[in-house]
Amino acid sequence: SQQGEEDPQALSIQEGENATMNCSYKTSINNLQWYRQNSGRGLVHLILIRSNEREKHSGRLRVTLDTSKKSSSLLITASRAADTASYFCATDFPNSGYSTLTFGKGTMLLVSP
Amino acid sequence: DAGVIQSPRHEVTEMGQEVTLRCKPISGHDYLFWYRQTMMRGLELLIYFNNNVPIDDSGMPEDRFSAKMPNASFSTLKIQPSEPRDSAVYFCASSQGQGASKSGYTFGSGTRLTVV
Image 1 (cartoon, chains in turn green, purple):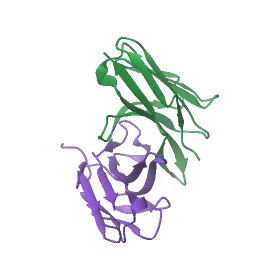
Image 2: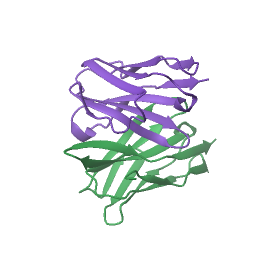
Image 3: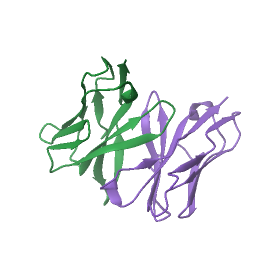
């Protein structure tokens, strides 16, 4: 399978702590994206990092990409209870001239007050 | 924009019945995707369209599944006949441009299908 795999499957932290989630994938990609899914809702796009980028920031989010290791990490700093959700990495890889997103199974993050 | 709109939000049906899921993508988006989410298999891409034309339906599990996009503002996913193993959350997503190069996919809230 081409899909990314997140690690850990579940993460439980206290408010104010940082949360780090990792994603590994198998083939060359155009870009890698991170999404958040709150319980019972659809996925929400958080951040996109291109294959020629190594790090990207958006607010409290920091994403890194290491194409040599085929891995990415998502860091959420100063976490809040509202950050409780599942986080998915999605890889955009070329497929017969088109590209589609393949999602991992996600990391479930629980932030306790 | 109200985002990607899916209906119904919940559907409970008996095995053997026909089920139709509906999706209205974001205006101006030229790609539309149908995904299925289960605990066991995660998010699976079923089919996607570009400018209303089906591009890849290799993810459709069986001939019981079919999808159409008669115009830029509407798509359906139909299961006929439905089976209990089809129980899942079905998501529609849309994007502008190939590979969602800038802003990713926009997902609807999903349809939770239960086949009993």
